[in-house]
Length: 115
Length: 109
Image (cartoon, rainbow over all chains, first blue to last red; front, side, top):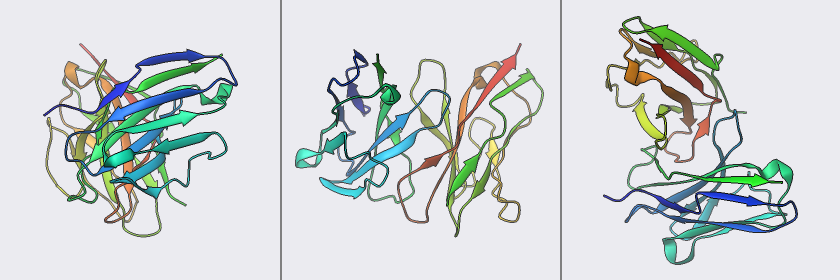
């Protein structure tokens, strides 16, 4: 089966600019996650979707970050405006709802550099 | 509050030597524990989870609730085991993962 797809793979922007990331999960996976991984740290969950509804966005900085998952498939994560501390790898993952606590499948990530 | 601690950022062992990557957790309840691995130029992927009680690529991990630990072990390290290893937990029946900071394992030929 095709894996989780993400684009772009790399992005360099200046602070205060806006940026958007796209994710296409594995076909049939109802649950989609966005993680932020800052250099030297483990991934941190930003938001979790079940189909097109938000399950958990407690760690999402809502003053500048937004995410949506239209039609319960693809998802976009937006940062507006970006700050220096947003430099990180943004990982998208998906899992089957039939398996709570089951395996999450990760995409290759988008490396964001904010100058 | 939940916490996953991986005390070693870097770990080097010789090929054929035993390896143990430490993971301690803090969680009010009974979490589910996982080990994820990221090989060079590859995606983060699941290595094993405690509920499966299985050995993957020669690795095992035993959940010790008394010591709140979930250490990853392999009796004989191989060069292809060199990678970044992350311990993670989730609440029972939940999906979202809380990760540790990771341990980079290098197996010296």
